[in-house]
Image (cartoon, rainbow, N blue to C red; front, side, top):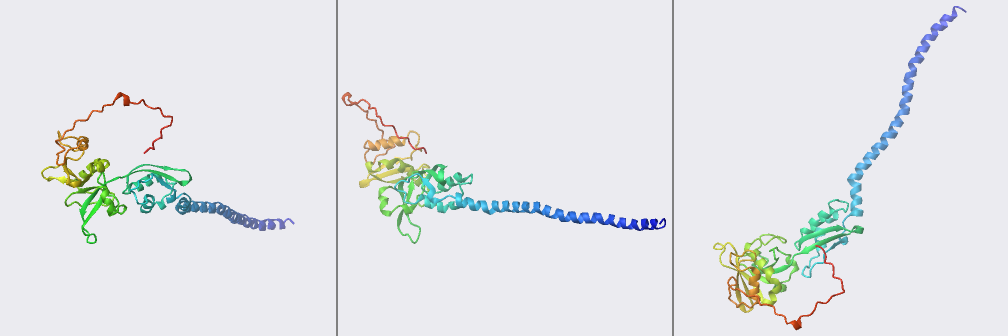
Length: 322
């Protein structure tokens, strides 16, 4: 009994060493099995979340923005155009500016809409753009007004002979498609030898003589029929006088020498309102309006004809802001 005990003890020692060495490897293997799904359970949702967010930012948000918050042509309201504007302003601007790609969620949406409408030839100024309920846009516009037709000789083979270009008081070319040839008689004609536009529609005519005549046409336009004025021409040579000198013509070939364009009068030359008053006072044909002076007729009112002011109970209309 005493001899067998050491042998058992001796044989038990290596067995314990083997079990001790195997235990850590088993623990590591089990820990790997347990830990791997736990890591993946955290890592995969994070990967999916990041990928989904990136995809949303790149495709999803853009799709939703255009589908549910995109600018629709039918939702755009503009200031009612005058009768002489025949073009569909909204349709033209919406197409030319590719506004179908614009979203109302864009912080610069109003600025981009304003820029798009400002590029139209009929628009002189964009007063303001405002977002309305229901995805609507209200655009307030100031339109250009045609005041004259510039007589030109066509330079294109397909359009032989004389033609006309409509301009406003700033000498900006207006869309020719909005005017018929028969309508040219309803406007003052600007006759400048050799004149031809250098820019496109919506740009200035590009001739200083035409620009000066346009300023005078703007002044005379409201009184064109009353004064029976039909055309504006140039007088003299620009090489001798840097300031364009203008003359006006009326029915039965009646003519008046106007002189410098409005705002560019020489020292001592009557102002444009003074010259206009001379015409209204009956300055005879052939007159040099730079020399004709007028004396305002005093307004005399008889006491019996003077009525006391009436107090109206109606409220005044509030003018629309521009």
